[in-house]
Length: 306
Ligand code: ATP
Image (cartoon, rainbow, N blue to C red):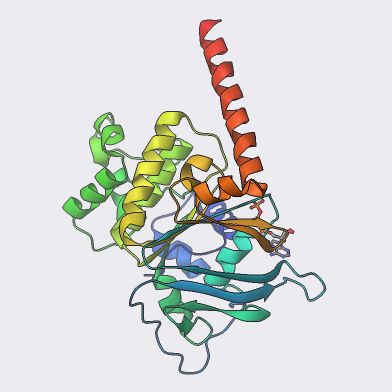
């Protein structure tokens, strides 16, 4: 089955169009059989993922010929390492992901997965190798169990429950009237942003692709949700190469490498400690977020005591 890798705004559109009558995910994907922007080379072989190493080699890209969005991006993510990408809105973070999925071809340079140029392999095999945790997760009007099972439709109940536990949803499930069989989605229980992301993580754990892409939600989370997501993400990152678009520094701190992107260029690259010591863009961003966090905590305490 095709996995969820469609640009999220498009997915949102399709979901809104269908949510009234949606019976199953297959129907949704049949709607998505639109002509792709890039095509497979004739007889393109399957991508063979042996370790999960990702390399961007001097990647240039623009959506239009007159405006370059990425201006020579070079980095390597080693197998089972975690790369976090930070940067201001419009810096090009999502564009990097779109190129990795090959929604578009680079205009210069190349992207390699385990040494294979992604332009030479079939798109289907490339996308099968990558799991996505999107910012906003689509939930269908079914039980929580079935919603998680979309990660791998032939998974047993026991496997789905294990994924739910690893995604730090067990405590949440315990409180539901019918446990994992409780109906969620539009006509069922509404889940918070943090819970929805953990459902997406559970799906990803079940799919178990060698490469994981996590688009962290920008919306603010309470510290309990944040801890839950972080722990769930650690479970994913232990065994899989993980790329994260990060908005919260808690997600970034333990990354093996942090890329700081600014106007389509990498301005800094390194671990949290190294970047702090460098006292540049990242250190400034860190100080700013620490201050914001401190202010939010003070506000919360004042609100509670008033
Ligand atoms: P954010 O944090 O707000 O999501 P980002 O760092 O992910 O931002 P991108 O979404 O990669 O940034 O966008 C980089 C630039 O490319 C922006 O100037 C954006 O307007 C432009 N852009 C993004 N998608 C398209 C598109 N489909 N067509 C044309 N321009 C685009």
